Amino acid sequence: MGITRTGNAEIDQQHEILDSMVAQLAGFCVEGKRDSELTCQKCSLERLRSCTATLDSISDQLGAFLIGHATYEERMMELLPQTPTCQAHVKAHKAAHAGVARQLKKLAMKIATQPPRQASNDMWQVIGDWLGDHTALFDSRMVRLGKSAAPEIDFDGELVNMLDQHVFPNRPMRRKTVPAAPDPTLNKKRIEVRGRFESLSPAQREVFWHVLGGKKNSEIATTLGVSINTVKTHRAAVFQKMDVTSVVELVKMTGVLR
Image 1: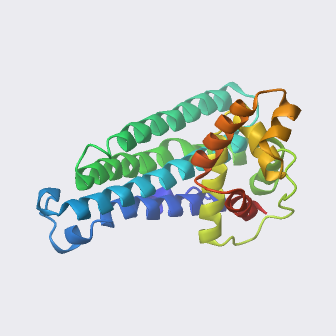
Image 2 (image 1 turned 30 degrees about the vertical axis):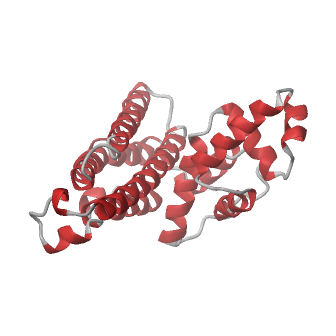
């Protein structure tokens, strides 16, 4: 675990969560735990379908968490001084985030056509290697830049305010304080939800807030000046990206951000 340590408590905990999620990719195959040489060809169709569904779920959660993790770090970068050194780091760091997101998306698309074990191994290799390399090349340096260039910055405290302002503007459930030792399970869900929100387009976010407010499709259409069909399309996309099937589930999901 040492390779994922940066000295920033929040980022280090997020890295631990990522490590555990990546470990799921290597251990989700029950048969493989008993026989490391076993291939998917020896499994039944029912087992293959189950493994594919499980891997698809892990990939979806991992993708959402990575977006949330990247968002956290990029908000942190906004606190760095506007020096050439810091800004060069920010540019390269953001490019690295975008790069792994593209890689994960491509790998996720192969889940439906590849044997589950091969797909999981490919994903495990890419994300596992990226996490270690990314921490060494970017995250640790980002934390050092913050401490050396602006030692008065309280990253954790100021970042919560920036997230409230930029990531979830006007939401009624703002976090007033930062827990000294946040629960890892809750923090995992919080970052995943933040990542899912970040994947919404601006138009989808507008519908998201109105849906949370309990408005009907016709009311949202009138408020936004669009057709009901447009609202329905955005609403369906919101539910799909947030991985919910009802408004009640959506409200409960966003409740973890309190």
